[in-house]
Image 1 (spheres, one colour):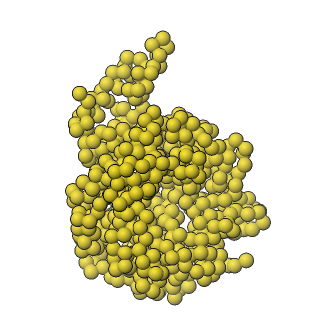
Image 2 (cartoon, rainbow, N blue to C red):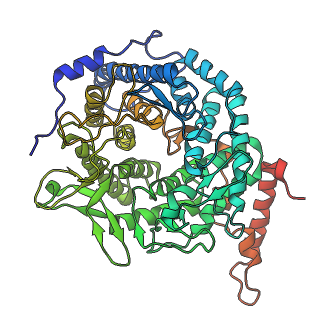
Length: 564
């Protein structure tokens, strides 16, 4: 059994030396004044002095990776970092748009302006054929909206609106339910399909992860239809949990029946739960409907999916596996994708969705977040490379968090460093910064290529990584490096009480005009009233009057779509 990986001091020094110092000094001139959040001034200054060195190392890594993309794959979706050839799968300049907010936040203004010019003059949608609806929303629309939010350059909003308008036909393929297709085409052919491997069913994480982007668009364009198609997906599942608080991975887009009895927090479901919390945050913490859905889900996740290894398994680590609620079969495997959960739980506990901040429910949720965070870090530190496998297996008879034999590869994923950033931001505990640094040094040691790009690994159980897989997904730049950079910032660059990150790490500011839930969040929709039984009505006249008030407010908010 290999020992846990501990970064040698030489690796730490080499990574720090690779950083290019910020020309403008610190703090960067467009950032707000630094607020001392925890500890004495001397303690904060000492911690931040080290963090600034690490922050510049991350900035240097991003600049190298961006430089490789700019040189070899400009305007394409991705660079193949070994061959230095391009790879196009969305035909939408994915890496370019995914990195717009990074360029702004990292202070790379010349690079940002160059990318903005490409978006304004080169970005078109007619070649996007047979593409993922989900990936287009989170990477492209999310990236454009975040760039607009940060820079206020109208071109980004115009392009996002144009793209979303082209995608609207996908919600009409199943008019009875409004569930959008999985695969779409923007060339005018209006092709719209669901995958054969799901038996033509819709995927929870896909139709349940469009709400932040489409609702943001609705507010900033005045187009009510963007709001309606996103809200309809939540209405489709609200009250349809199975078992209580959990949502199966697949749903029929025609009947809204769940078509599987499997539930998970990893692939196929993950970001749906994340967006329940983030929709509440985006509503200025007022939408009681999604708040109730989220808190019920956290209770169900804790009851059914969270396990402790005990003395015989992973040294009593806490983990989240996969569960079939009909057969009761539980798999002791944890996707790396699940490692967004510690951050989600910590953010929810900190934000007060469980009641009084610091109350019993919030404390219990925070404790669970910290336990899961340790397991996610051990997915890295228990491997000889210091990098996590795609899937971990919690085996009887070993104290380690082991790699699943069929998923030993590493794709440079962001979920663990995302949660490290959130846990550090919420608690101020410096160990989360140290853990993030160890992960970054391992990326530098094994994944960095000579020409500037980074590549995932084939086998993290081989101390040399088993060779490179030749892929640098746009999320490595857009998410992994962004969250590492923020982890070594001082917490004011993109404060989590003012911004919500979409699931591709694109920050959107919370605006007061998003406060629908305080007055209307728990009310039935107009369709609910229309279907109410006159003999045994569920809704009295006072409820009907408040629904009318809501319709009036929505009409004022979205004048371009006001009903006549």
